Amino acid sequence: MKRFALIISLFVLISLACSLGGIIDRSQESPAAEVAEENAEPSSPDDKPVLSDSQRRCGDGVCDGPENKENCPDDCNPPQGESEQPGSGAVSEHWVTNPTTGAELYVHITYPGDEEAGPFPALVVVPGGIGAGNNFRTPGAMAEALAEVGIVAVTFDPDGRGQSEGAEDYNGHAQQDGLAAVIEYATTLSRVDPKRIGLASFSYGITMASGTLARHPDLPVLFLMDWEGPADRFDTTVECSNSTRIDFNPCDDDPYWGQREALVFISDVRVPYQRLQSEKDHVQPDVSHAINMVNNAVNGGAPWVRLNDLPPDQTYDPENPPAMIPDTMDRGLDLLAVQYAQELFALHRAP
Image (cartoon, rainbow, N blue to C red):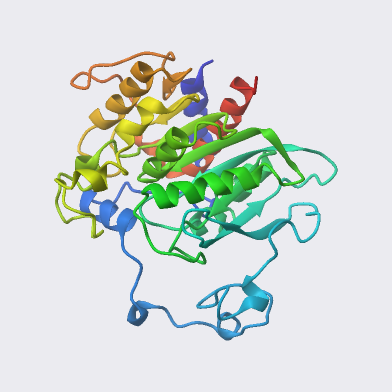
């Protein structure tokens, strides 16, 4: 495989990639701005934008604006399970119960356009920072891009975020158990192949994703794809500073961080692990955290580990890392992630 040749060819497609609504362009941002955007706390009520009449109206069939399952059940309370067989290019909304917290989690499914085909592979996507899944499901963003290549996109709002019930857990055990429930639910969808489920995480989402797989080893997940996730408490908090604007516990709180360090969890992950890392990380000052994640996955016994397009199952010196993906490719991150997902589904099959 010559993925770097493919990556070079993507430069020709940059104009197409720029049309994707979920593309991340960080070329003009400082590290501090990147951290603030990635990890910003939810806006206060006074910061909310002015809403249109349709966003204020309960009963219009759209769950948006301030509407949620409690204040507008007509718009925001789809049944547990598919309300109908999705048609061509359809989306459907569901509620999945987190067995640990009892919270009802909002799950959004985007299907490929060919309603006669299937079942399809499905990719469950974990958001970065303490965000919800809405950025992936805007028009033209990653969910639609996945559906266009024949992959069902499963996006969700973790506990306490977006349209989901519950309290924020900062990617600890409670939200990890919620993600496990979402993955299990995805296997029940009529147009999903239950033996072809992938998991993709972005930035701090790796903490939830790796913790889920380490603590729920029987989940039917084929692979884990991780884009630039922080390895430990020092990466997550940017050396224990307050620059992330997230109310993490102090770095010396070992029980708290025992639930929230991907570097520890990745040693116990028993599915293929793909790390995507560009030359300039979107938060960290170097790429040593990526090397540490790959090394721990290999040394921990993951069945297949790869950094970008380098040969699999290699370990590296954090002080002398190999060349990474060019920074310019982050501008087409959605498209890049979709292409890697296609390859990973082709490479890895259920026993």
